[in-house]
Length: 234
Image (cartoon, rainbow, N blue to C red; front, side):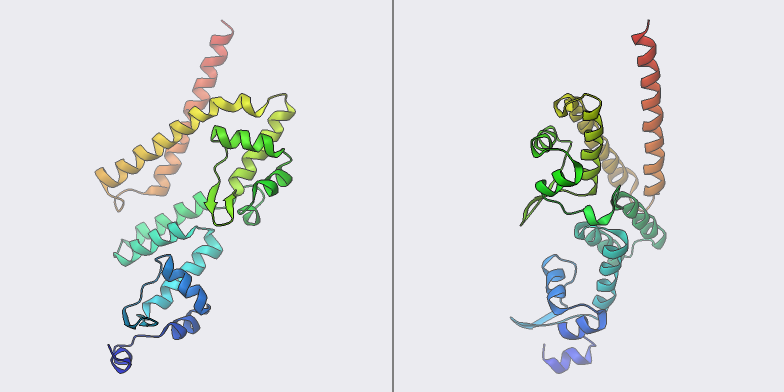
């Protein structure tokens, strides 16, 4: 496609997309590598033209990153749903649910990218204890080019373990929670399959479903604790 043909079709160069969306050209190139933005046509190895809709996509990416604290993989999922013409009500439901899941816990968004050394300093636990929690699966770092990085949930977990250490427990004593983690993973997989394979994501209020399931788990935990107290004292 010649440049004049691209202009006639209303397509834009990457510099024009960047200017309209209020981001840098390198940022757009990064979004392209991550699959968030795709050129409509390439006229040469270093020349491509983009649909004006890319401007709105990039603005949405920025909004979701800044306000929703969402990782790019989740943002990509939301963009795909919008491009498929997903029901607007379900899109709102999806975004609400994702915002709830990924909203910073405890100390806030600034603690989402910590090295092991930074996590130790922030939590007050020695690195050896953190390594134990990592082995047990209680800490779940993400692999990056800078090595394993820990987020706000990891920091919150480390802080709770620090409290438990004050009660006389050791990190090794928490190995029982490895089984709890496996149970949660199995639950998430089962619910995901149930939503997608049986009912379809456009028919299930995901946020309400998650809230209801959390209520169920809370009730079950209380019930089990009641039974355990009675059994221990019989």
